[in-house]
Image (cartoon, rainbow, N blue to C red; front, side, top):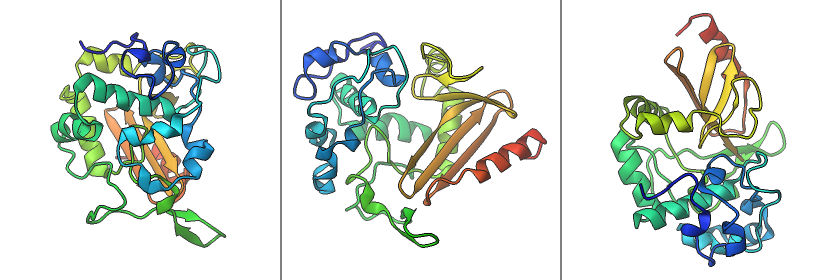
Length: 264
């Protein structure tokens, strides 16, 4: 009851992050469904020209939002925004009184039994941590570790495993993380218009139709990293793909072809 989808972002995010004239325009729902209009903070010269080592906590990223404002009228259309999800992390800290990373460990990873998931920092010693490899001059690849910031954050770039993401899916289905009504809101289209029949974007979930049925989930990519989490509610099947190479989509489509043939 502390947070509502329709709350103004200014209720939780003060002017040290963004001016009130910006946050008063935005709702939490618009951050969640990527209709805020906020441009990508990772593409600014501030992000490119500063040392990655500076960014350990959410508060360290404040300078990267300097001068950012919506590129279009909030709520009118969809444009994916990592900036919006960084602010959602700030809202979690303000509403809970806890550090964002501690909150996620306690209320998501621990509850779901996800023991090998976290936003590990580059200077932490973590066993079996994958190294991302990006294409340089084909067929040669190079280490892409330093393409990102010091650690993942509320906008992504964390670490997980196939088994942990399967546990996450089971926790969602069992109601361990969310009430059924909340999950229904996350899994229904929240955009002004669906991008395709049965498609669109919910609150934090991509929605689409396929020959294998309705899908709720999310994809992700970064230099040297590709991820896909697809849950097919009608079939009670889940497809999870993680790669430490640049995105490669053929395996995803091949598995989906097998699913339509009834192969498990």
